[in-house]
Length: 355
Image (cartoon, rainbow, N blue to C red; front, side):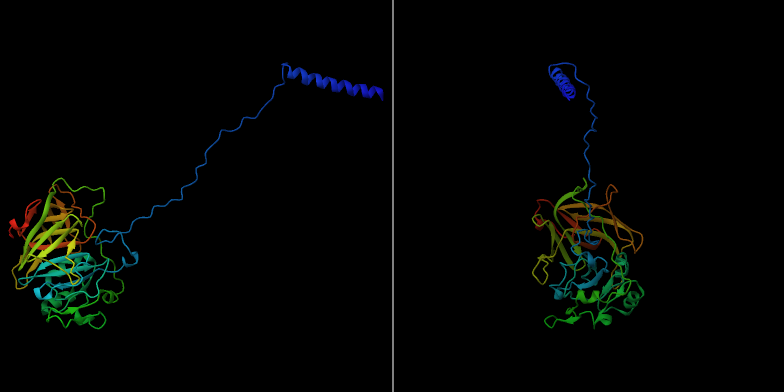
């Protein structure tokens, strides 16, 4: 028993001596440590997705309601006779074409991004409408009256006939008793759209639009506006720098709608075309000619080209580059050649004569 006790004491003493010697700077046993891997940063996969901006094809502006983008374009022939004013819907149309007719003008107002209830006054169609509007992909064509030859040609075309004769019952057509006939006919675009035939599709883009980073071309000329002689109508467009729009005057008076809002657009396009000398003037909108585009307070001179009625106009500047419009509503003057006079920046419009 005493032998075991002394042996245990010896072991304890030896162990204690080892610890003591180690603590006093003796050689220590080697300690092996496993090398740890370097810290790595874990990159989580990105969950951010870029949602493309959907724009209205006829304005280039972001669509407020994408559900309407699939509907067809609607063209309403709006009277511009003095007794037809003020008109309804001219500040809601995406694009308006002004055509020479019999010693006056008429509007082909194109609606797609929004409508107008009511709209008008509505008047007759013309031969020139068939070619002019062909690029809109079988648009609904709202009109009233026309000589037998014009009526037959429209019926044979790909314009969807929503005339007073066809759509009177369901198109919201109505007469305004406060206006003299035949300048008293109106309709409702919301009801007319319900009459679109099955398979109707949206219009393609008609112009190329500028992005925020696109500068106007070096050839652009800063202007205060333009004066234009249409048949029987003096037209003036003034640049409004505050609202960034061109506002229209007709026969030297502000052109107002029924809400007393002056007709205003972001772009004015003056197409110089040839008109045939028939009883009803007919514009030639196939081929090529001169064009002046007014946008962002400048004028850009160039040429227009169009080889097929199903294609939109191609607008190029003097260097051959595509002319880009400012997103927004556009007014297209289908004018005779050499009928426009620029109003240079800083010049009093009264000093500029109509051509």
